[in-house]
Length: 270
Ligand code: GLP
Image (tube, rainbow, N blue to C red; front, side):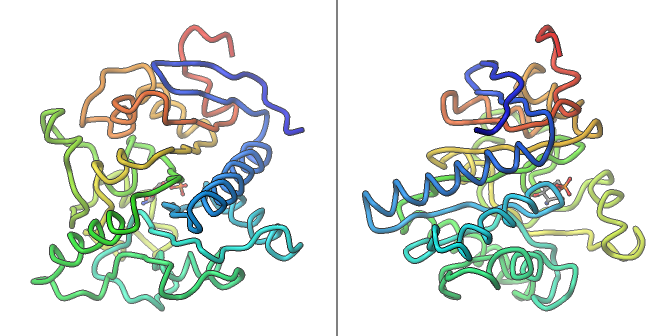
């Protein structure tokens, strides 16, 4: 039994607070395993939306461990990643394709033509087509069963950065090319050996695509995420805080966070 400190209901979202990121990751991995099993049993296949960054690394480690132990197969599973830098070669050590290969794809029985990461090598003139095609692939698969999400310090989901778009436009944003926010560039600097080397653009799964998932698990760990977590859960629902857009799909989102990331949620006594 994984130790949860609190389970809160905030604005239609379930918020599970754990003592450590390790326990939250174990619980998230267990949700992913269950989503795969239920969906494969019901339909013969499962569609996962996957995230990168430091936050989900332990979730992937648990899934790989289950696979190695013989208790989890990815046969029948398709995956769609949230984002990729642009331009970016798939073999670049800093690419999200490489990240996924290192943490998951290279260790499990996922068919290579079923693990999809937006292609950072697509010619500029065809990037929009490629992104629209990505959304069509997901739709043709019947949509995402479970979307794993991290949260940027600036509240971004995938690379959907804060904007001043009206809400109705923000929730309809498709998969597309975007400019990265200054905070995102700063936070990625270490992986690229300095801020100057961080690509200024990216391709990201759209807000609309994320919100269409049948369930969403959001992970956030550490004090650095506390402000973005509180703003997403309790601030105004606005494109300025992309995480807050998850409140437009009540009943579908589980936040799995540690105490430090929960520390600015108001009135919950943490
Ligand atoms: C990155 C990714 C996001 C990720 C977020 C948090 O820029 N594009 O998908 O969720 O920022 O990253 P980390 O988990 O390393 O804090």
